[in-house]
Image (cartoon, rainbow, N blue to C red; front, side, top):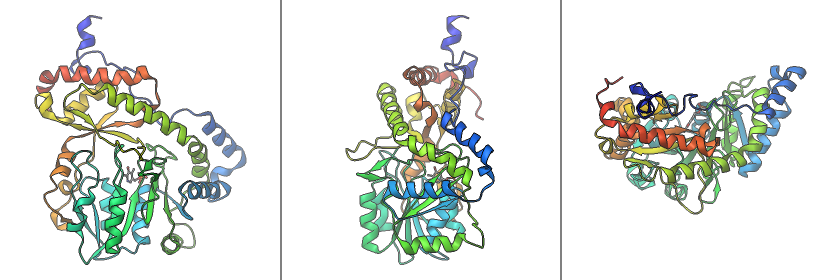
Length: 389
Ligand SMILES: *Cc1c(COP(=O)(O)O)cnc(C)c1O
């Protein structure tokens, strides 16, 4: 094959940097094989509930130092249960970032409340506690914040503002289980917090979630809502059994992902217009479900974020557009906006996310990502001519 075929982006007919594509998730794991074999032998796969659900509940409570854990069927369900747990209902307002997981605003709407959208910070596109004062109203019942794309929300500031108003805080730690947020485990700052065990997440059971709280009344309201003679939001015994070995490995896996992310950030330093989120505080340790990047099309001759991502994906790297900003996907009648939401608009247009499985691969595989990105960047002009899709 000629030299030029390797230099040309795969999207323009060249040879991909990683022809094998991005690594699979979940990874092959002997500990998981063992669980599945034992489950098949013992019939555990058909059980509603049992020792694995109990052990998972206890381990999550212990790791977070929280006395109440309710396992449930998804992170999205967990957010809804958390909202109900802090008594959010018809006509109440819930403050959240205008750049957030779509299910979160849907959950607020599902319990009959009004989402109040605030802007994100300019440097890392996380929830900005600075806007809380302007967002509060007599109807405010809760603040819902998510740590996104390897970023970390300033929880001490969120808690201080919410406490001063007597408003509850829901902390969404779906993207960073096992991370450290201002000196504490992620998910231990809010009055109630949520985790996800969805198929792409760091802890995976195909589906699943959990609600955590130190407040007995919140826990009781959540249990009352889920218990209808049976568990209406269930996590099964097999799912719990699959999560236990992953939880045991989480610390080591997170450490590897953190090292890999630091390596990537360093090796991308020279790429203009491609800036990974900053989460450099001494007492925090981010978790990487995704590694977020601020993309600036102006540095690539105006090449759109989406075409850039498509070209990098064609090289075999799982780089994707982030969320769409919530105010751009929902009718104005459904939310109240605080201020101009300028940074959230920018985030919705220009976040790129690198999916986490590659963060457990070799340094050589990590370096292939930078090669792919630089190759696409060098050919921005030619890619610009492609029809949008
Ligand atoms: C994935 C995710 C959820 C919801 O989790 P599911 O288990 O997929 O329902 C909620 N919030 C954030 C920030 C997420 O990334």
